[in-house]
Image 1 (cartoon, helix red, strand yellow):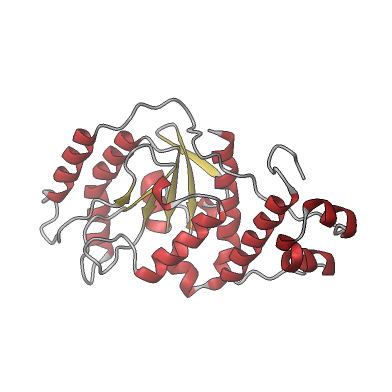
Image 2 (tube, rainbow, N blue to C red; image 1 turned 120 degrees about the vertical axis):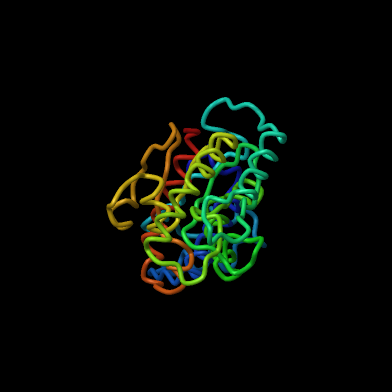
Length: 261
């Protein structure tokens, strides 16, 4: 247990407990030793010195991801101008590039140097939210597991409008028209990391025809910002077997943020 990460043994155990709880939400299963199970169930009412003296440590030490510092940006950044953000919001709301448009969505979250700028594939039926309720709930659990708070992210869609029964041609037209808005948002907000969720957003931002399974699992660079492509929460709900791969991507993101670059 590295001394630089934990002040006491209980902090270490609480991290393990949070991590295993999240694994349960993602339906990840793995064998727990009797010693680890005992620690998780009995540790928090016992003194650290008693635990370290009485409990036999597991033979294999669980791997605990690095903690993300609360305020450690990848490089010095200037505060975001609220006036510039308001101008960008108005520009998006007044966009008429597509004749079949509906009121465009700017996105939600912090616009002032967010830790993670999330670009999602699909839009939601809610005129003010980028995701459906169940998808947003799962995203919250995913980010909580890597120590990211709701106030440290911004979430938007690669297509800003909802269009019923869109065709591939319509979808391509809209992503092309909306891309300039997303680029402007990134430039203004200066995030530490970008995460594209879904194949459409990943291919569009990276200007790639590769499938998402080939794009995920490693970092790209976009506008000098590290970018991780991964699965959208809607895909994880529909195909739970993708959750293990997504958890791997999340761990990579956490480590990169902890490095401050």
